[in-house]
Length: 69
Image (cartoon, rainbow, N blue to C red):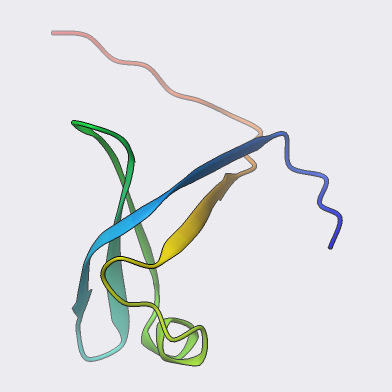
């Protein structure tokens, strides 16, 4: 599979939390560094996502918004 996204981050699934429609996936990229994604529950089930499985966070965004306090 080829992708146009440039930000492909490999990690391990640490947690999968299913809701009624969406699922929250926590991927550990390195010790103490996690990224969280929300995807449809149907997609999570189709991909058989579970804790311990290797996954990729693929990020393609035209904008990144940064805020400070």
